Image 1 (cartoon, rainbow, N blue to C red):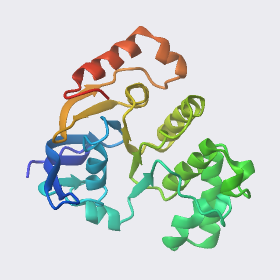
Image 2 (tube, one colour):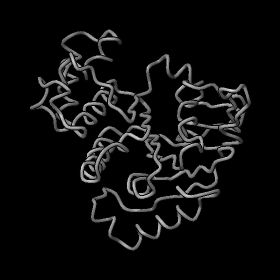
Image 3 (tube, rainbow, N blue to C red):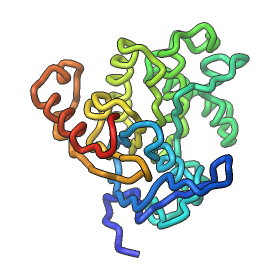
Image 4 (spheres, rainbow, N blue to C red):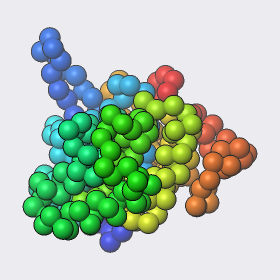
Length: 262
C-alpha cells in the first residue's frame, strides 16, 4: 500500500463493486475507481441515476463491501471507522421520529452513544442554534416544513462530532428556494466545524456551488471520468451563481461527463 500524506483522509484504490440483480445476473456498479480526499474538503460525487455514486458513498461508509480494491480512512478500514462512530449521515429523507420532539430527534444518536443526559441536551441545543431552529426545539416533525426537517437531519448528523459527513442527495426533494437557503446554511456549518463532507448529487449547479472538487461518475459500469477543481472564492453567496466563472465551471463539469446526460 502506498504511503498516505498527512492531509489525505480518504483513499479509494482500484475499487469495484459487483452485485446480483433479481434474476441472479452479475451487475457491475463500479469499476476501477481511484480517489483521494483531504481532511476538511467538500467533495461532490456527481452523476445520473445508475452511475454508482451512491454505491461509492455506501462503500466508504461500510454499508457496501467492495468486490475489488480497497478503501482506507486515516489508515483504517471503513468498518473500523464506522465502529468508532466517526461518520455522520444525511440522507434524502430526514427519517425523523414523529413521536419525538425536534430536540429529542437530535439527541437520539447521542442517547445511543450513551452520552449523559445533560451533555446530549446541551449538544442538541448547540446544534439547533447552529441550524437556526432553537425556537422549534419543542415542536414535532409534522409541524415543520421539508426544509426545516432537513435542517434537523443536518443538526443530528453533525451533533455526534463525526470526522466525515456523508450526504446522499439531501436536497433533491426540496424546492429551489428552500435548496438555495440550505446551501448557504450547510456551507456556514461546514466552515465552522471543519468536517470532511462527501456529497452525492445529480445537480451540476449544486455540486459546483458547494464543492472544492467535483468527481464526475459515468455509467455502464460506473467509473470516475473526471475530477474538476472548483476554484471559486469562499465564503460563497448565491450571487456567485450569476458570475461568468461559475457558469464556465458548470460547463466544464458538464463537458467532462461521459455516456449520457446528467
